[in-house]
Image (cartoon, rainbow, N blue to C red; front, side, top):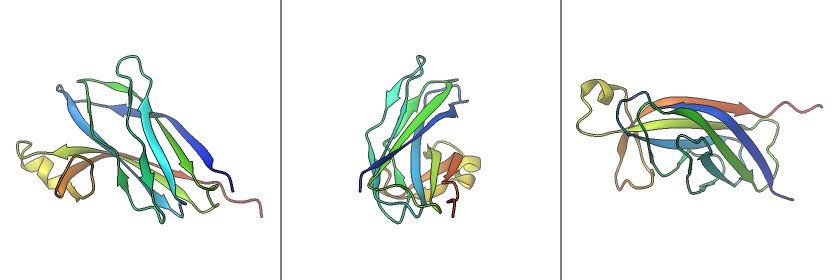
Length: 143
C-alpha cells in the first residue's frame, strides 16, 4: 500500500507575550498508522520548519523540537502528516501547542502546567502549559 499525505494548514498560532517565548508541538491521535509529521510556517514575519517527528501506532503523543517565537507574533502553522497507509474512517489527529515552564514563571503557571516526558532537548520530565489544541477527525465512510 502507498503512503498517504495529509495537509493541515492555516492553523492560527500567536505569542501574546512581550518576550521571545518557547513553544513545543505535540502530535497524537487515535487509530493512526505509523507515519511522520512536520510542523512549519511560511509567514514572512517568522518562517520556520521543524525537523520531522516519527508517529508510532497506536498514536501516543510525540513532540517536536522547541522553537522560540518572537514577541507579539501571530501567524499560521502548516502540519504535513504522511502515514504508511490511508487513515481509517475512525482515526483522529490531535495537534497541541505547549509552553515549557521554568522555575522563574511563578505559582500560577506552575498550577496549570502538566508534566511531559520525551520532549526533545529535555533530559527529564518537564512541566508544560497547554496553549491550544486542534483535533482532526476523518470523515465517516460511505458504507
